[in-house]
Image (spheres, each protein chain N blue to C red):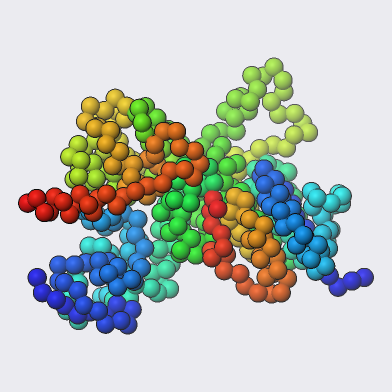
Length: 174
Length: 235
């Protein structure tokens, strides 16, 4: 076994833009992977979230019962939980549905000729909410999406136990 | 008018006794955050972001309406002040629906930059998700109350500079909101001259020009000080 740290990334209610930004680190990904093993992510083929993950990057708001179940499980298995991007940090665009009721939204998307809530589709919660409204978050990284540079600095700082001055490098909407 | 000496953040400074703490601080490159104050408009003191600590008083004072006095000792930064400012900005975020990423004023917004400068990286207070209807009835401009922070700059510029008084505030407390004329659609307003001054002074993307996409709405409030200067010279 090696002594590399473990990194996971998860995708809740977001557009995948934050994951695209992770990929935008380009050749720096190779260097990053000399420091960490990517043990769970939409980008790798592991179906179960492993135990004792050092760092988990969370993209997206908590919008459904499935998101809620996932994030609680992930929190238990993660040492440093990072809210990555505005959807995780503020609920951002997914929260634009919040002033409306879930019933009104489902009626809008289907006139009723197909089942509005099939059994295998996660139930929407009343509001799309930031991750920290449900579980403790250790690091907040605003931005829509945070740039590859920002994600790279955050990860390198976390791996070397440096504190990042987040507001110097990103902000809501950036 | 006479000159007074005072201390701001351990710096010995001088100013005129008809100036406010905010004016003297600004003249000496000391930044005090504010969202409702704008050069060229009357001061309102409503946003409370410019609260400062004056030695000898337990109460905090708004720098935009407090005149400097001889021997005054002022602190503009402290843990206590920072906590209040954090809470105020967080409340502004939770009381409306501010989605920076899709806003016309993204990266040109005073609320957004104030939050960043204060070191706010998330909102810890619960969001209220109010239901507010956008008024796009005007031919050239849009009013999106979801992004309004009730700084009343539009109300003041419309009344004091344009002389139309199309804008005003209705309701009380958390239910306060902007209205045009007697709570009629902006496009139906008979008092609005369509001058666009309200749009230019609005610190967020609440008032904007039609046709602007995300991040395209850049405001220019500097015309106010020119108007102020020219009107003074014509007296």
